[in-house]
Amino acid sequence: MTGGPAPTSTGGSTVVSSTGGASVEGTGGSSETTGTGGASLPGSGGVTGTAGSVVSGGGRGPTGGSPGAGGSVVVVGPPPATTGIPDGYPAPTAANVAKCTMVGLTAGLCPGGGPGPMCMQCLFGGTTYGTSETAPTAEGTMLAGNYLVTMKIGGAAAGQTYVGTESSRGLLPTVATTAGQSLDYAFVVNVRAMEGQPKHAGGPSGYPGLDIFYSGTNPQVSAIGYALATATTKPVMVYMASDSTACDQTGNVFGGWGQMLPEFFAPPVGIANYANSGASSSFGFWTDIKAKWSAGDWVIIQFGHNDKGVADATVQQHLESMVADAKAANVTALLVSPPARVQFSGSMEGDQSSLHAAAAKAAAASKMVDYIDLTALSVAWYNTLGSQAAALKFHANGSDATHTNLDGAAKIAGLVAGAIKSQNVGLAKYLR
Image 1: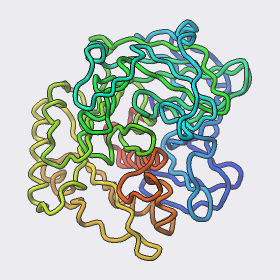
Image 2: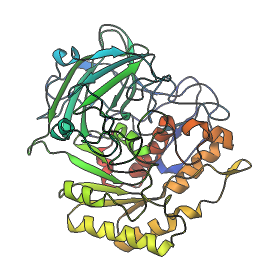
Image 3: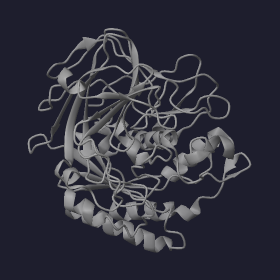
């Protein structure tokens, strides 16, 4: 399910491709991808129609994020293909849309992290928001699992629709549809009893069960379907072992790149993000992942930010131990070095050697698994922005040098997805 044409820029903008790690500075104006016309969509309930304009690479609004120095810089991943509804997935219904409600903005964003100004939330489990930061509710535990989700985007009116899920997790970049247009999409959504991080202050349990959020200038969705995966429809799960730079953040101020990674993958892949703030390479939630994974799944491992003062050799040993566990379970490991901190010296990023990219690279070579140098890729992208101030526009509160906001998280996720494609990592065949 690779689907979708290569992205093209419109309106004189420069699109930055995340494939191959190349970065190009924008020249002003917004950037987007344009879908192909007249595509026939397979699967039950498939429709035929012209594909809408898609803001790719984690674009949550019409321009795909905040502009950098010199114009809009968009890190573009694979365009979100209209793949239709796979066999065994639930047919979307209008009755499920009737369960959704219109809600207001909070601090300028919709629930689920969308840009608004219109917001719609669909709470298909419980409606009581759990505030415990240490223990999930009984209802949340009961309703946890991997959900197969389908939807028809579009409707009687023209619209722009961004789709999020759970704790501000990106599911589909903003799609522009014309009046009367309908596009089928399918997803795998990992619903955990603790909605955001496994256990961390600021990461409450949230709403129990499946939550879907729509946002845009006039979001359009005409039908939704959802069902728990079964033995015959088991997804390929990608587990994430990492820290706050990748975790499912709560509250829409911070964003981890792992929570935006689902935007780039089509079924049967789902992302199960066990990254937790403060986590180091001696990862405390590794046993939780091992208890969930099964043969054929994947695990993405990224550590280094919280291994300050730890020797590269020790970090390498920790990473190799996790890879060995994965191989023993017939799970494929992918090692990723940490995203860079924003620490410019003049117009260029500063030294990032404290992030242990060397340890991750050495561990990957030792265990013969794929490795993505996200440290170098993110440094290259930040350098296109040209200054500390421009780079911090993609970071929490405009000042946190380590943690991205949701737009920045989407850009970093695009770099990872682009590297998966350009390096022909086994997950590449599942990219949208």
